[in-house]
Length: 381
Image 1 (cartoon, rainbow, N blue to C red):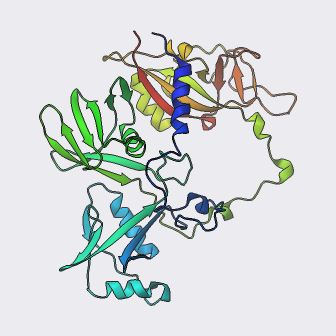
Image 2 (image 1 turned 120 degrees about the vertical axis):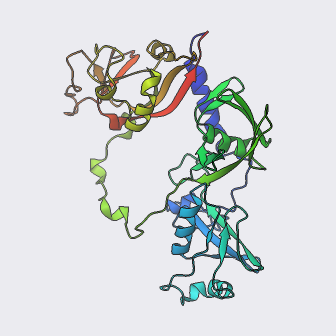
Image 3 (image 1 turned 30 degrees about the horizontal axis):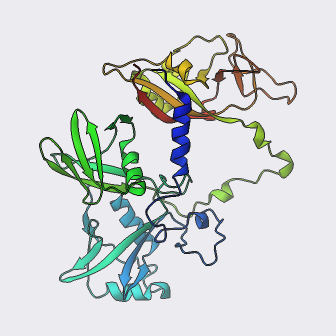
């Protein structure tokens, strides 16, 4: 059957519709809008913090915020899936006597050292134990904002090494980012069990018990969900001071940016390179001719890009859905190394195409103006 681009876009549209309908509550989390200095809720039911993560300790049914240094230390450890127990960091000397941390100092002073268990989320010393918690911004599966938290799912192999989930088959779909699919399942599904086929083996992944069970052999492995590390080494860096605001009379007309999702068919051998280096015909060679310019080619019709996709040994074909800043266009030709000057604006056109009024092919010359948003693997009948 033909590759149906309308179905792909409808799936992406429906996925984004569900982003703000997570079955998980968002009260015990950090306010993203405060981080972006745009929170208008008064009072706000979420926690205000300058960082996307926060560690706290329970004291008399209230939670005390740890110092920045303690939070950063625990965050670095927690981002590593193999880390489960470690020494709890003491209050740093520069804030030890600050009134803000008086209650925290009194709690921790009952013992000379504490151990933290990142699976049970407790610190302990001898027979004493105290609950801790980690707060963060909502998952980037639920909100498409830059300050949302990225989570990665791991499974434990026979050697005790933790491996991130990569890809697999779920029902009739081939799942490229299985870790993201598990995150999506946890937020939007009412079921705790997720069934997937990886490397010819069938697994039952239990997101409540955090286990992976081989349905045939019955072997059970541990799984873990940990955040991607976002700890900054230098908190004094202010990006606001590194840039000056553009004067109002110099702002570009954003309506002319012309952002589009376009297709790019490819062969499997260059997928990893594309993911790490972006699409660039100078690096990966030409998969098509250069009839409309010497750049990277995209199509707004999936069937056209499918004709440039290659089938691997398992019968799968591959196609990228790419977010492209198309901008202004003009018809290209094979001699163009860059788009020509637009006499109306005095600047170069942003892209070249095959037809000024009804283009199906777009050619880009600057890889900073597009990025591969999705990789689709599929079979044709």
